[in-house]
Length: 179
Image 1 (cartoon, rainbow, N blue to C red):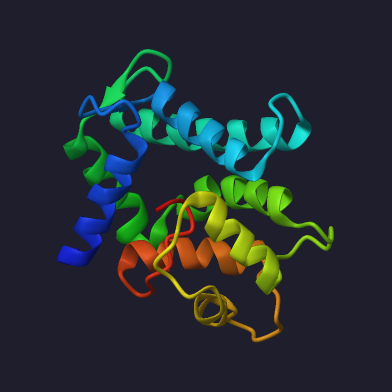
Image 2 (image 1 turned 30 degrees about the horizontal axis):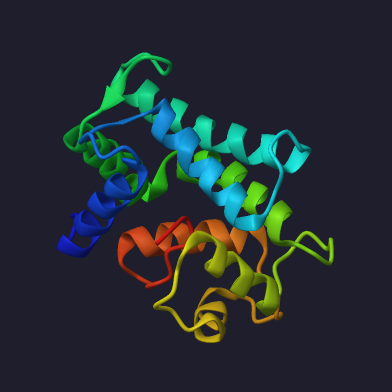
């Protein structure tokens, strides 16, 4: 059963990704969001890390377009379509397909923020992540501790993917994919 918190967060995600504000989301909106994140991290277009993030965002878009039965290059999703797909594939059925779709995006952001190159995110890198995506109303240290499931002082890609899903389920209040 989907809760009002889950529906609210899904709608806010739609609104965030509707970059041009036309009431629907399409490939250009997802591309613009990836470019905004790259700019916030100070990553130059065309670098391998930039290409990885752009490909990951467009991969998420392709997943939504496929599930909606629209052309990924010319189609657009309405809020109702987006909410239905999010509910079915993120909120219900144990997150069927969710990790497969979100993991490349999380991995790409880890590549951008992981200054020590260990493949994980430490508390300072996590703060940089939140700053870059525009999250201002979360205490970074408290949020980090909430996500660090194994308590090792590092966030793995798996822990971060689980945190994105937990956010959309209303279990935590840390929006890792944007304000």
